[in-house]
Structures are given as C-alpha cells and as structure tokens.
Length: 119
Image (cartoon, rainbow, N blue to C red; front, side, top):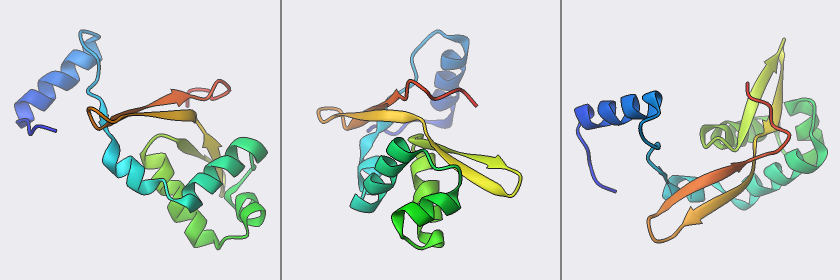
C-alpha cells in the first residue's frame, strides 16, 4: 500500500462522490486480524438466528455482554454488521454474507447480504 498526500486522498474522495471513479480497495490485513474464531462464531449466530438485541445474542452465545459488545463494534467497523439503536436496545444486523480477499493486492471486498436494507 502506497502512501498518498492529503490532497490526493481528497481528490479521490471527490471523484468517488461524483461517480467518476471507483473507491480504492480496502486493506485486508486489519480485517483478517479482526476475524477471530469468536468473531466468526458471532457472525454465524447473527446470520442463522437474527437476534433482536445484543442481550439475546449474549444469551445465544453464552459470552459476557462486554465481550460481545466489543466484538460487535469491531465487526461494525469493517462493515460486516450494523448496530441499530431502538430506544435503549441495540439490534445487531448482519449486512455482509461473504468477504473476498485478493491475496495479490492485499485488499478485500464484502458481498452484501440479500436481505440487508440500507440504513
């Protein structure tokens, strides 16, 4: 991954916003580091069970609530899930069904979940 100046990054963002170019691919290393066995288990439960809240996800997994919340924040950072606030409750929703890693370039892209609705 090459280093770019702030001006170059701003021009890239403007070009993407105008539809003149594709967004740069995302670096895969941080995502791969975040996809621990526990994180993958959480994603599997989210995709299969579709829990209505973090509390329900905690009950389904048997993990401590702070641990689950931290894992969910990390998965949300990489756009694999989204956290929807509903009053005092937070509902985790899977928004990606697959991740494709390009080993040659060290980048990744996600495949949107067919049932995910834009927030």
